[in-house]
Image (cartoon, rainbow, N blue to C red; front, side):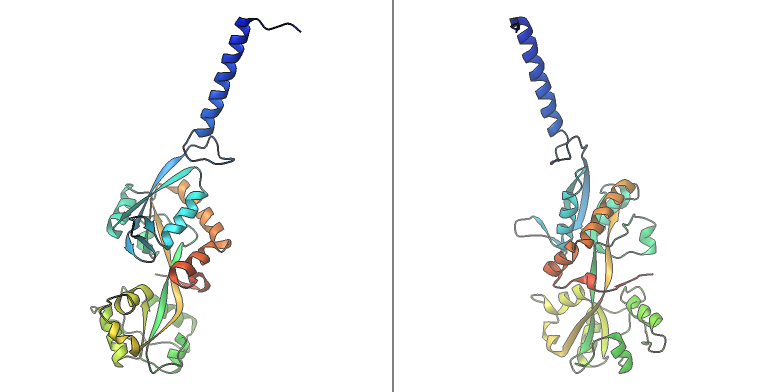
Length: 291
């Protein structure tokens, strides 16, 4: 075998060094990669979340994002190597405006899906969570477990504000039960605290109230109506779907986001997080549609 002369040897070694260097550069390009995802071009997605709505999204004692919505987005981020999601805590108003204008591409603000919002934002085919609804009862109605029980026992119900999402819970029930309808009254202006007080005092027998609102008024530390807790019964019985809002130009990201979200739902991951952070699996309920 002929020995390679020194000039050829140097040329060969330089070529190998360049080849190895190029391969290593390929492996780290893009910044976010794992096995099977080399060469992926990574795009940053700015995700805004309301940072004050425990247990959904908030900043923990170390100033880090925490909560149900945060953990869902983290799981989605892990499965989308082509995107890097940046977490930005802010107000609901800033998140809504920011996604509308393109400042952010995605936000979660415990938002319901409405026709008005469908004109401004993109939505996935799968909701990301759900707001638990309580049937609120005066303490004497221990036998009441459902809206049908409310109807059968002819209980009175606190009026609703016309724009209140909870009114759709009663409308949906009435549509499905034409012979056992619940009378809906509306009132233009009153506070949620008034409705709780009216049920506790017996002025009305029942009401439908969003869990987070009830907890803020009655259950949370220092709640203004904590003294009424013993006069009330709460029965979780349905949920209203909550959704991420996505900028209207982000159809490609929306498709990728919804594919992973559906996977997480089918794998039971969303239910696990719901039990951990919300105390119950909101996906066990039939979600109430909004108008």
